[in-house]
Length: 191
Ligand code: 5GP
Image (cartoon, rainbow, N blue to C red; front, side, top):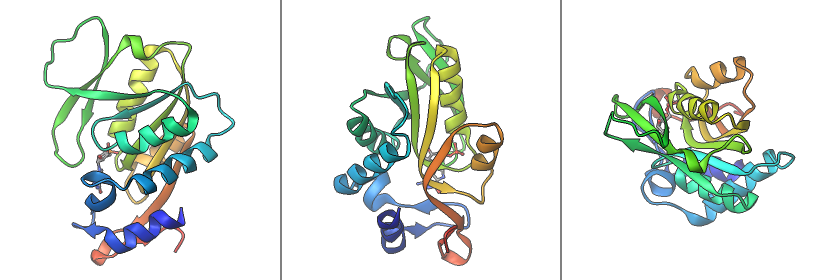
């Protein structure tokens, strides 16, 4: 997605060889016009699927997921990070190691919002090691819903998440794939 690449080139901050900061349009301040185009791009990629739910994880997945839900006219469910290890019967739950905070969170989704009839598209902002997406897949499996696809805004292709998910056979599509963040420079797969 050319416009997203331009935003990353102009506003992205390479924190180190592993982490890219895009706080000006995705992770802190949000660019609604760009998010709308991101939603339309995911819609185009999965248009032939009968998506009934968009599933993401709080907080940074919500903006692109919301716009994707708007494009599909489907509700958006976000897995909530729960401090409590005590679960109620009313929730699906999974453990997710946070890439940026190096902590393990329990994430939960209320059972009433995901059922076996649902066709789900998982959306997230970044893909690194794949922990967040695997947590959401775990929740989909618990709900016995149909996982139609996984859409990622920015995939760091030099980290193992994308390769693992594709090897596992999941229909993963990323809008932008980064080859490297070495030398404080963003190199895209297309370069
Ligand atoms: P994973 O679970 O695939 O290891 O990491 C993905 C999650 O960690 C995303 O939900 C995202 O919030 C966060 N994340 C991973 N890498 C980056 C990064 O380079 N920049 C930012 N801003 N977030 C990241």
